[in-house]
Image 1: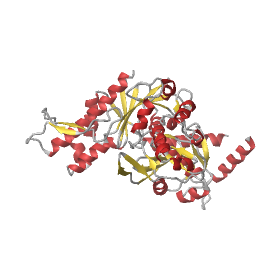
Image 2: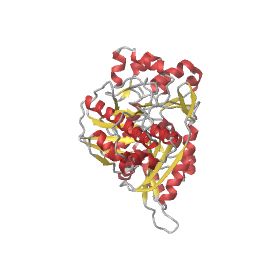
Image 3: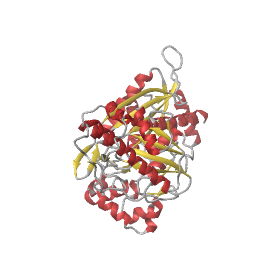
Image 4: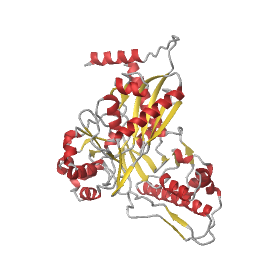
Length: 461
């Protein structure tokens, strides 16, 4: 076994030598890929974390009605090819020695023995498994206490239960039940696996023991054999296959890390301290703090962190997705919208409820402007929308405090944090100092850091 490992390491070193026609070695680099809900980001970076090249490519989320949200996994692959090639072109002459994939949590991808998807992927936004989530909540505590989280329809357990009832033929035909980033890595390596950070969000995982919750899975009548092995986030999942390597413009045989869920990867990139909280803003928002022990709470989520331990998550769905709706409705640019944060408040009754899509802990709420009068202008509506989203974020911070956390400083990351007036409004509303995160793309930066650790470890082997 060890001699085979040495042969694999030696072949990797030979492929990684990167000798160019001019005879000089290309600078070493790593690749981090972030498979998001509506787009993929690829980051080429030095092993020390300096960004060299970035690429982005989008895909659609199909919403056919009935609370459903799906994407064809092959669209993820096509977008990944585009994003990686753009990032490599921007990086110039580099020698990529390892890669890792991070991505959106929850949802379900059913794949056959060869890794081909058998149906569109069901995403975390999906609400079709609402009844199955209720069934989860009604199970005896001996089965659900190990999960650390309240049931939610978009998590893999309820969704797989729905599929077993409504599409049993597809479940029977499947070989693997995967999380989104795990399907993409299977496409790269031909090897199925998941990691604790993603598995802990499935409602099928024993968080404290770090393994699949077999008694619960048996109680639900779900196919345990279709769940992949759980490997460390920073472990080797396999080597990049020749076909995908050619599609991406990478050398075949380079190691691929198991990877991590998106927020876990972002925390890994941030290097969060115990007295800090991370607030990552994009289409949605995520409050996250580190936690040492398994300690469930009713209004927050608890997931496994990269390298051990846990992190507590307070998710907020109505951030960028809601502000984008307001911006389009009022015909404003992002700069115009965020710029209204600098306007002095009118001190009147106008307020905005940002619940345009269901929040996990408040599924029945809907959005609204209230207190409108003829005196209000377009800019007042935009400013009130920013106030409403900032207030919603503050409420989720209060949930973290109720769970026993009292952060003194906030590390702010994500694409929706660039405008200084918006950051100032957030700081005022939250009542905490905000510090910009060390990287603008936290999740792909975390994936790149996992890849860098893998490359260093193999070089030392």
